[in-house]
Image 1 (cartoon, rainbow, N blue to C red):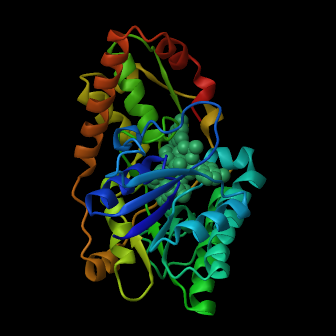
Image 2 (cartoon, rainbow, N blue to C red):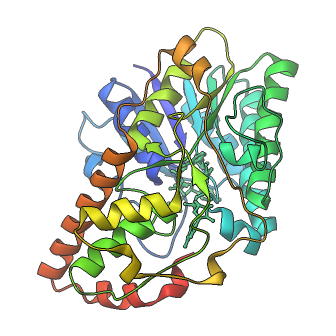
Image 3 (cartoon, helix red, strand yellow):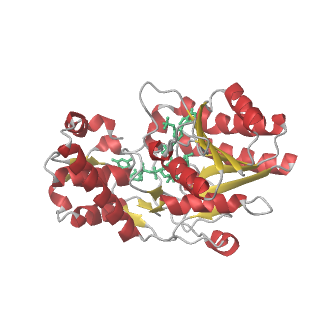
Length: 345
Ligand code: NAP
Ligand code: F7E
C-alpha cells in the first residue's frame, strides 16, 4: 500500500488531496498543528476510529517551524510521497507577519526537504509553489516566465520553490514543484476574496448581513476549482522524472466580475451592498495572473473540469446551504462573526 505524508492536511487543498489519495488506496498521514480549538473540520468526514483495523488515515502533531518534529515523523513513517502544502498562505496577512510567514513557508520547506535528505528516506516530494511568485510579470505566465514577487508570502514561496529545485539538482531528489494559480471551493478559507464574497452573498440574502467591504476590485485572477488542482499534484508525483509545472485554467477575471456573478446568482444587485474599504488594499498588489498551463496539459494530461461560472455557482450555493443550516440550528456564533469585519482580511 502506498503511503503519503501531507503537510497542511487540515487546509483546503490538504483535505481534497487526502480524499483523493484515500480513494486511490493510499495510507495517508496528515500533519496537524496544535491549536486551542478544533482545526480539523475539513477532515472530520474522513476520520475513522484508530482502533478500526481498516483505518487508513492518521493525523500527527507536528509543525513546519519545528524541524525535529518533521524529522521524527519522516523517520517513523517512511512515506513513499510527501506533499508539502503547509503554509501561512494569506498574502495580505504576510505583510503583517512577514518573519513568521518566512519561517513557515521558506525555512519550513527547507526543514522538511532537509529532513528527507538527512533521514535518507527514499520518497517523492511535492512543493506547493504559487502563481504569486510571478507577481508583476505580465500574463500569461508559464514555467519560463521570470519571477517578480510582490509580498513577503511570495518571496518566501520563491525561496521554497528555489530550494526544491536546488535539492533536486544537488542531491538527485525526486522533488517537483506545482506553480498553482488560485483555486477555490466551498472549503476555501473565509478571508480569501472568493469565499469572503460568496459567504457575504449568502448572509445578505438571508438578511443577516448588510454590507460587504472589499479592497481592489480590479485585480485579475485565474480562478479554478480546488479538487482539480489536487489531482494535478498527484499526477506530478507519478512521473518518472521530477519537474515543475504551471497549473491554471488559462482564463482570468476581475474581482468585480466575481462579485457581479455571485450576487446575481442569489438574485441581488451587488451595487447596493458592496463598499470599498482601503484597509483591504495591499502595500503592493499583483494585478494580473493568468496561466499558460500548456506543459501540464501536454505532459500530465491535466485539464480543469469546472468553469469560472460553475465555480461561482458551486460556492454561492454551498454558502446559502451553510447559512440556512446555521440559522436552523440557531447558531449565535454566526451573528457575531458576520459583523466583525476586522476578521475579514
Ligand atoms: P490553507 O487552506 O490556508 O491551508 C494551509 C495549511 O497549512 C493548513 O492546514 C494550516 O493548518 C497549515 N499550516 C499553517 N501553518 C503551519 C505550520 N506552522 N506548521 C504546519 N502546518 C501549518 O491553504 P490552501 O489554500 O489549502 O493551500 C495549500 C498550499 O498551497 C499552501 O502552501 C498555499 O500557500 C499553496 N497555494 C495555494 C493556492 C490556492 O489558490 N489555494 C495557490 C497556490 C499555492 P491550520 O488548519 O491549523 O491553519
Ligand atoms: O486575493 C483582492 C486582493 O486573498 C485575491 C492564496 O491562496 O492565491 C491566493 O492569494 C485578489 C487580490 O488571494 C479583497 O487584493 C479585493 O488581488 O483571495 P485573495 P491571493 O492574494 O491571490 C495565491 C495563488 C496563493 O498562493 C495564496 O496562498 O482579491 N481583494 N478585496 C481582496 N482580497 C481579500 N483577501 N479580501 C478582500 O477584501
